[in-house]
Image (cartoon, rainbow, N blue to C red; front, side, top):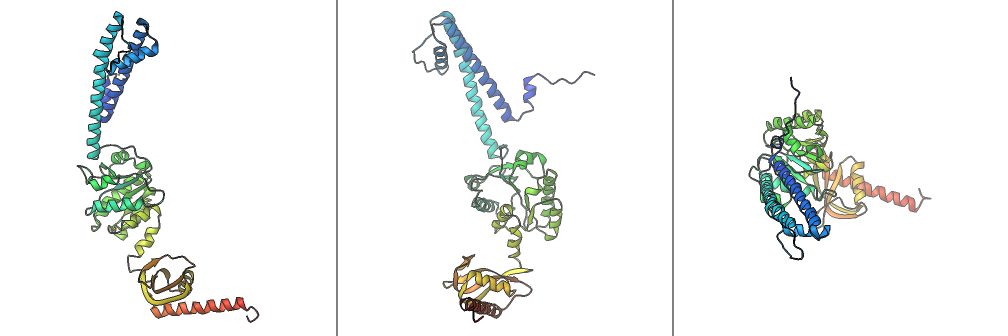
Length: 381
């Protein structure tokens, strides 16, 4: 049996390249040939004409570009013949072909980008797989805006891997710098095309946030990512809570419910893993929930209020309502609070009454008064 021999036919070699590679390869070959013709013509002029090497190169270039300054001109027969054959018949034709191929490449690239079939050279980017069945454009705009508001993420590239936009991304998504690739996360080839391995974070969205069956498709993609050792950088949406364990078992970093009206939860899960659990808990009434207490606040700092509620097992103070009914979140610890209410994270199974909160604050005032008196008059203590 004859040993395998690789074909030396250039057309056979090019047949294995994508169209963009074929065009680029052809342009490179034409440029190399053009450079060879220019060099050959300059050497002939240098040898046959009373010109220096630099003047010969200058004459070859001005002839190629058809500028014709007239400062130099071939006077010998061989110089003129080489100019006609090498420059006018060969080099100018080659340059025309190069320009034509370059224009063809630009049109090809534009069409591929528009339809999501161009392979961008992405690095350290955010990859979002799938598109929500409803309101995808608005969701992507809010996610991108929230991500780029995080310090260190202001200019991070964002790519979509989806089959939702076969004729091109909506203008509002292109305007904020999003790009897309027409494909699916279930395909290893498509994941390679979007450089999933070089992504900083991967966001795996549920196709339908109201359909538990969409978890099966999401899990298929998650399993593919796990096989490629990419689960550790993946945040996945899971419609049914009892499916979360399946995602955790294959190494998915974070799982959360799809909450389309609050993409901020997804962003928090990406840039600060674990905080999404706290945020999700605020949206249900099963364990903890934020509760508003209407009561008068004065003579205590924010740190005093937080300490008083924790010491009496009431909950965690999240914000207070000032005299103008504005909700002030996370004020300065030393700020003396004057207001008309508190928002407290409490246990849903045992929500204290407002009288319990008032009593806790009053007891803390008394404690502070005794502490201050003891330090001002230590002999009486």
